[in-house]
Amino acid sequence: MIGGLCLAAIKDVLWVFFISMLPVVELRGAIPVGAARELPVWLNYAVCVIGNMLPVPFIILFAKQALGWCAKLPKVGGFFKKIIDRANRKALQIGNYELIGLLLLVAIPFPGTGAWTGALVAAVLQLRMKKAVPTILLGVMISGIIVLLITSGVISIIK
Image (tube, rainbow, N blue to C red; front, side, top):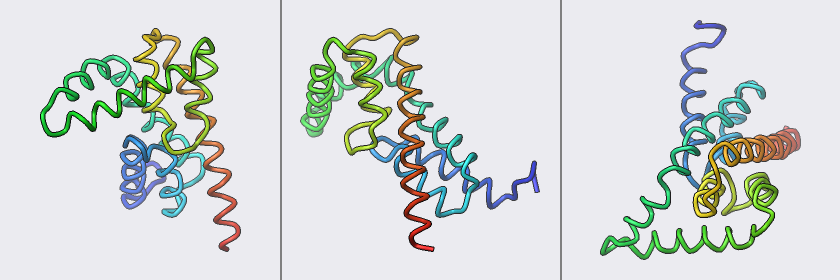
């Protein structure tokens, strides 16, 4: 035992942490995995929120430059161009309600939403890091609570 957690639990925590960092999957996919691995709810939630937020500042800082460069690559450029176009469409939808729109974009756990999309939109809108990161964090926390409630409901129905 290490601090109350056995090595298997630490492995599960790391697994959930890395899943929550993945684009598209994010904490919406990681929270159910943590629940299936029977992690304590508070630990599952905290690990998923932290893991989901870790890439956000880097995405905000480097997304536009990296995606622009990738969009020029011969065989995969079209894929990255679609990502840029999607982020631009999301940015237009947000419009004048930047922070509230960004919060809702991240908080609602639907496909195509989440911290990665929020960070891309923040980069496109050229939002300052000190405004964008707390807004995205709040959205991730809300999304995590929604997913936890849904996951808990599904688990209780199955049992």
